[in-house]
Image (tube, rainbow, N blue to C red):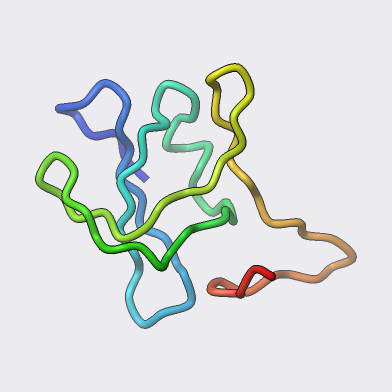
Length: 92
């Protein structure tokens, strides 16, 4: 995860969604999360969207977040009882 130097609030994330290649996602969260806070975190990704170019970079999905007074809170994966949800798991 890295902050885009030409933007005030965009982050570039490379996310394992259980596919052959990592997905690049451009997200406007840098005023709320540092890149270090997001490394190796399991988050919920909306993957069935068309790719979109943001600041010349292809974004291949969207991070899902709850909104609390205009502040996003990323939805994270519940890890408990020694069980881990593999990347790419389907949400039902």
